[in-house]
Image (cartoon, rainbow, N blue to C red; front, side, top):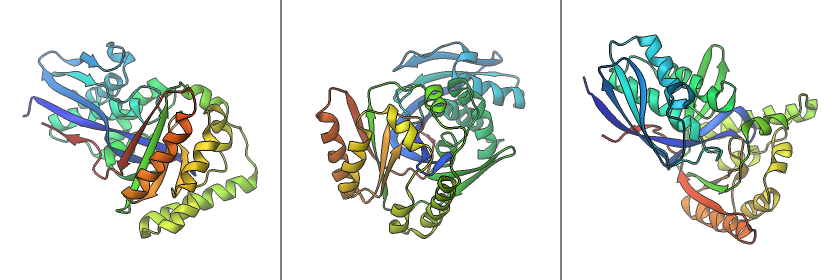
Length: 308
């Protein structure tokens, strides 16, 4: 049995426009690295964290909690230690906690000989994600584990659908260096929504799924609208409407809030269009006093991968 593994655990975009809490996709080249090795002592220990200040205590770290969920189920007669090389800023809205939670269970599963499938790994990872967001959801975790676009059909029982990803799809992310707490972003949402908004939302989600299956980029463009969540959460993000208008004018297929924010994402057809959209994003924030970062990424169809 292999004793040590190094993995790359990618960032993700969740709450994809009309797919609040159910639709996400996986990013490429944006993510964390983790090293997991077996130990003679049972249990989970976190021995190294680089990049950001995160708790070493296993039950307070999302990677530790998800790993414990798996280990408590499998009951091996040995333990694991975890090193985390954090590249995704916590609270960025591009799946920082999800990368940790999904990465630890993926790595341990590999070392154990893959006794669990991807849905089961997502279930374990949800226990860790709940530490960060105070609720169990999978639309940010499942894309890292499954790769590509995923639809969370249900949570109880957990059912994940891996959707096709058209070959020319790219994502462009802008991350303003401000903090938006997930709890705050959820608290601002209405408890009830007008029937017409609900009809519009599930119509868009259905047509978006069809567009992914048929590589229909024009239908994709007409589907990437959020009538339910964006009108409220966008108020928490400076210059949201200005960036949205700029990227749509630059040729983006769609634009929205990544996760709970503050990051925002655009989806484009082709790398050339993605580069133009990135320029448009940067121009808006360069005229503000807010620091920011941008990322250009092809949709990652593989998900978490083994490095060594």
